[in-house]
Image 1: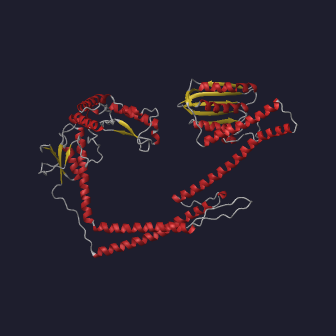
Image 2: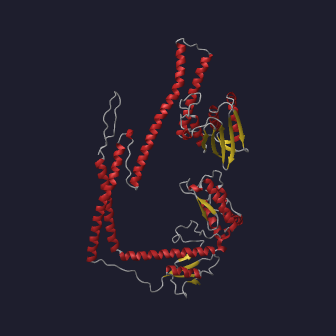
Image 3: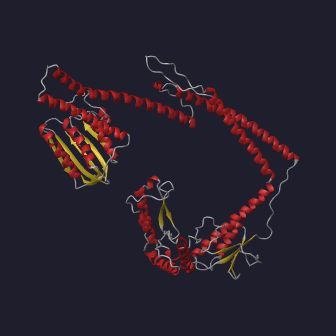
Length: 606
């Protein structure tokens, strides 16, 4: 099917009719056919799998039993390796063997390397096979029975002298929680992991810089610093490793508490020396290697068998046909119900953009969510379109006034009606500066909308920031006979762009002076509250009605509906205040009482 997109010819005042996409029937047919084919394929595969499983019942049962035996052998081996890693000998292992035998139904026997019995799960030691099931040695684990073991084959539960005290565990855990919270732990950036030695570390997901995280001044590297218990054993380990490397004429290295070799020169020799040194250091803390014998007690039942007969074959064929019939019927019914709302969505999407079409939400499933999302998208598109039209109108209005003034005076000079004196030049310059101010404000907002508004943070004192703004606006306050004062609690500091923050506070002060009558006051206050610095600009002006407060930060909005230059600026100052504050990670709010005053509050993170 070839779909012809909607087109519209412009020019000459005429338009060609829109061509709709002819996709109704193909959409329905495609969805139904795909759903039906998928269901039939699933049904056929299910029937074939059922027949195959029924024919192979005996072999499956045997394989399952073998899998259970392998699983129980792995469980037994892992438990005994863990016991050997945490005990110096096999003296008390008998109760552990009996518990394992009770859970797995196997007979378990441990002997020394010289085949001397150490312990058994039975009442007496029976005749053992000629070959042991495995060698239980925490310093040389079997990778086939423990697939997740490390490449050095040393069981991680064998910690020896590196086991931390309770106080050290608690201290490291508290430190890790603080670091995780600093780098964003509550949002799911990392998780705390406690090693068998009691050392707590932070594990980051692979999506975060390959499983690691940038420090951001949170002290992530502090978790890798050895504590008091680990310092002595770690120094002895480094001595053993470097003695080994010295005999091989290799460069010395320093091993950290994670036992990882980070040198590229002689990496193989360094890893071999490290593994040997660790085994030498842990030998006295783990049980000696032992031979493990796992056998099945006498009298175990054989796996059941199954034989296909003609009656079973006919019964299986009948059930298969019934399953196939039910699958087709259900697929047709469900597919029809699925297609109906999708067709409504497709029709609404093909309507002209200007109509902002909505679709009814009739279900509470994924299709209902899709319909609700489509309606929300249409509503937002309609709202954005309205905002775009309003903004274009506002921009045109703001630019028309100064341009009309400049043009009028220039035409008057050209016609000889007005004289080009200094006063006229000053007036035209003022209008040109107003135009430049509006264009600069629009550029700042455009950069903020595009995510290109750059800030250059540096340490600064809030007191100096407020004093600088107050000094810059003092002359204007004196002219308006308005009292302009600053009050700072303590000496708060923060990291921010001084130029941008002066612009934020300056816009708020300029706005306050403009709406404060003679004899009033404008006060700049600042204080630190927790991990934030709060800056307030309070005035005793005319105030803002409650119904207008939600719109004060909108672009080109003014409470003065006449849009007079005497009572208002370009209408962009507060919008810029909000975007610059958000660029610093802060917020700005406003409270006001009519005929009493207004307070703008800027909260910035320290």
